[in-house]
Length: 112
Ligand SMILES: [Zn+2]
Image 1: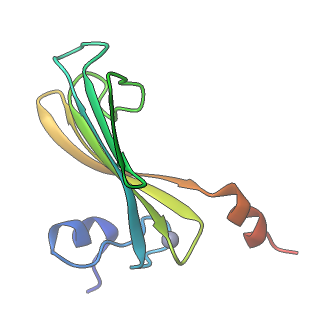
Image 2: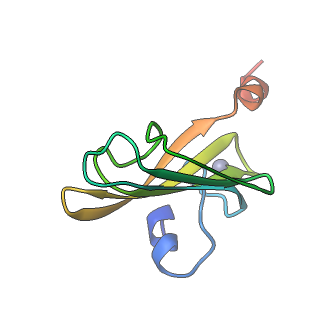
């Protein structure tokens, strides 16, 4: 039985692209949000490109009301730029993928 992208997160296997199932994802950015419940501002830390930035923005926080963390990837096998979110919601911890594609590569993938 083959594992799914969600299974690979829990089994210590290579993380699979949620779009194509490829196992060659590159982590390139991490963001963490910390705030009091329902606060419009808090602490937002971003590690990207050899730099660490800190601000109070909550606009990209995957949690609508609490703390969150996101790891950003790009896939070698397709145009996906998956985002793995871990966040608090209604007293529970949710882990989920979000996927967007790189427009430059989307055009390359179109049939001719
Ligand atoms: Zn992919």
